Image (cartoon, rainbow, N blue to C red; front, side, top):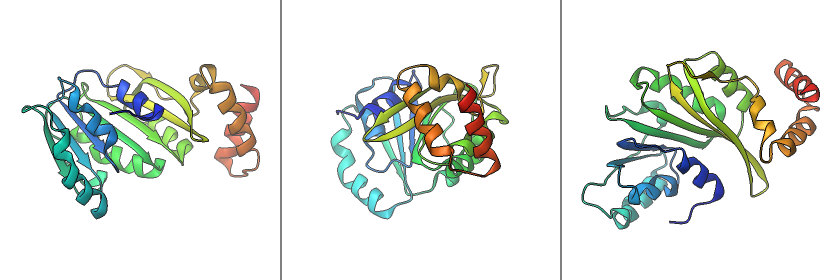
Length: 208
């Protein structure tokens, strides 16, 4: 399965966990791309849309290439799921920062330090980063990509442990790849905003 650059990057953060959870899976391309990864034994596709789930149930059998590979489909919101106890990689992408916060808060008591969480919000990113900064989630890596005329932040996280605290603004994002262009884009965008958080972010970017 050929993935977009963004989905390929999300996929690349997988290590060796037993299970993969694709929360807010939509078309399911990211999750289903793990059908050929031998270490993945279970794939959980989660989406609240009846239309999405109906289509997935109609097509997923074509992606079961191994007897040991199981696909479990949940017609639920991420805030409602109960995780399995096996090691897992959890993807939460394609939704706003506020919804991702709700999902992460719901999952906190179900996570172990060996689990990996990979997120990619498309709005309310400052609010999400502020929550993460004060939470027990720790940063393994972060990057920004430009695809189809839009910038996407991606963060690979763990829960607990002694990793790096997530910064409120993501300073390392602006130092590699399309980071300088992203910084210029953010300065142009946030200079029009007058709320306190946006003003502080703009001031940071202007002097960074």
